[in-house]
Amino acid sequence: MFCKNCGEEVNGSYCSNCGTKTNENDNYNNVHNINLNIGKQHNPYKTNAYAIWSLILACISFIFGWFITAVAAIILGNMAKNQIQERNEQGYNLASAGIVLGWINIGLSIFAVMIILIFVAGIFSRIWI
Image (cartoon, rainbow, N blue to C red; front, side, top):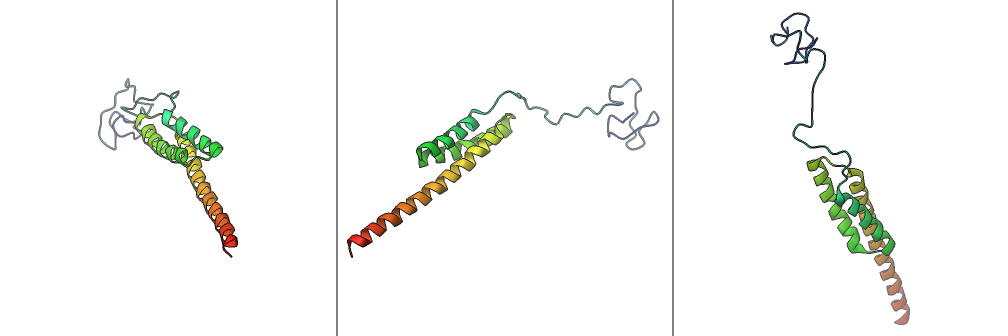
């Protein structure tokens, strides 16, 4: 049997740790009833919409190569992570994937622009020589 106040094991009618009187018919004797999500509503079937859109926009940014959709995916992904923690929803990994893919696309876009600029500079340097 365990104390309902401190959780220590009790052998008599009083807890040796905190002095609380134990009751033989109490429901707390053998079960620890701890709920860490007090005040939070949990819906295991609800996925955050911003997380879904973050991943969709990140994928679209790879298909069409749009820098703007990658930035939107990063912004929506960060907003989704905040909402997921506040509302206790699902979709944290979707939001993370959208953010990572968005940053990868931005890096590839910058790399592609640098390659194009080097190529154009090479063409113009041959024309002017």
